[in-house]
Image 1 (cartoon, rainbow, N blue to C red):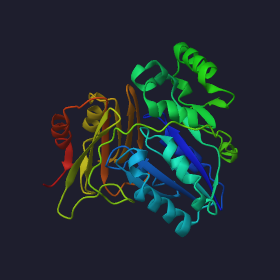
Image 2 (cartoon, helix red, strand yellow):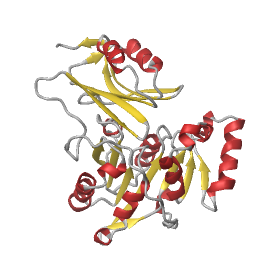
Image 3 (cartoon, one colour):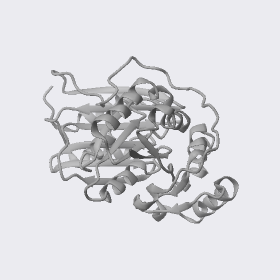
Length: 328
């Protein structure tokens, strides 16, 4: 039987960083798997987690209400029946609602396969000062569904953040554990905490336009002759644009980092080839984190998310000019 944890949290709350830390702490001899759902169509987290040693399945492009049908079930069934992991970590999109996936994981058909443990919800307390985030039903219900609240990025808090977190805990935290972490350093022992939060969740509203059916198990790939491709997505009041480039494309390092730092959007995430090798980029608002990669990715991927439509064409033109080896 596979032990399963749901790792939730709103956009930019630190889910992927936490997953990387947990995977690095995996007990020797155990087989772990990760099922990732992303809001955008490109699929960035697969590249970020590629060096973790875990078996990975990606379901990009949509909120949980869209992927909780066949694609989600196919990915889950594949991992449970073919991989048979000791533990499965599920990371829904930051704009996904937890109700459908929890209902699926607790369905009778999965009981012989799944031992559902605590749901962890990442919360960046700075988001409590953003009315748009606080008003988002998914943000509220992700927190409401959690067994454990993980207040992330503690090294970046100020007194206002601490006060807002304390107030939230008094009003909505209940008696659930709340811990503070830096750099995603969640104690792996928390994963075996029993699931105790069984409160019913409201049925989420559906704001996500359905796109054409696509592969349920992989991020967007290039056609044989294509050197790059763009994909757009929108839902829950957010808009995304992502680009994937072939493995021969190399970007100017300084230019790329400046492009990502100055892009007039709230979220930037990517793994790209540069002259020095490869780099991962993670920007939430003004928080900008870059990291060199030990292994070069098969291709380059980057995605932008914003609360309104951005000038994707202008951003794309600037990005294309940063290619050192681009071919066509």
